[in-house]
Image (tube, rainbow, N blue to C red; front, side, top):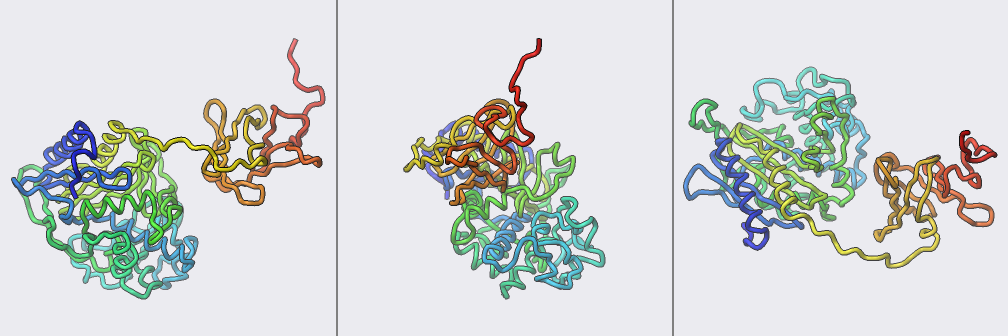
Length: 461
């Protein structure tokens, strides 16, 4: 799937190659493969290998570990979109008897269900899944280690429960549902539960010597929905496009946007680090960019998928070592290199197709008390409200078809905007979640809560 040199500027391609070459050499990875996506398609593929003449291409499988969780989350979101469950449902409603059923489906997706990080010993990543045949073997005697819903605590058993939920509702094995509902529609024919040739072998690299040890490849059994999958840079590049844009055959753009939205309470360290978690997706703020995606690791393999929706750039990085290069940093750097060297060219500005006088009347300057705001009518059918200077609350709002508007983000997300008119039909003020916006600061002709002093504005002598 290597693309022609014309896709990216030569200097950009060299910078990308240099970054992965440094990562492979300094991280002492037996091999490393990467891809960059822009404009909905792969525009660059690169790889490095310790074996001369054997650089992996975009079709070589690596194990992707916890990126599997994002695939499982997509299956759960499909059940929600079909009306078969609600994200606010407790797990017990659909999968009774687990001992962790008070956690909601959304909490499990966001790792806020209070569950332990790992299953009971022995170490599940290096032992056969047959040792844990049932959910009770995965969860142990005391599955909850934190109060449900109070904190983000990454949990592999939590995604085992979500995989079991998919199987319970669909009536088919998790992997069959994944193949039928996600992999086949998106054309991910090199993503699978078991390795398919050509695939990389997994290695441990000695921390104090340039020596290798082969890692075992285990079928994770019940834990499969948390980390079983194998994939390629080519397939994950296509998956990145889906996570950025949606695909009506699998999930809508609104649903994948919901997955990318923070859903977990942030720890103090997370606030400092600029990271949080959505519904099956990691979210971080790095170098001034909002990045979404997921990392993954299993003995012998590291993986990372990083997307900047605003820049329309994504990166995939895969390596076949247990520890080594920090692929999250590599993925973020690949996105940054392309976004800074070849910034996204915006679509041409286009005017509205039709102008609604009653909507156009809302445009212009408004005041919330003494704070100045501007309201713009945009060509996408929305209105945008924001402060005219400095920082402040802003939001785009969507028309509801009845003369009201609903906020789409920030403080006003979900809040209702109404245009309030006088008995003669003239526009008096805007009411946004009970806040009154007037054409003049504390306009005495509008219905300002608390009233306006009858003597009006004054100076001090």
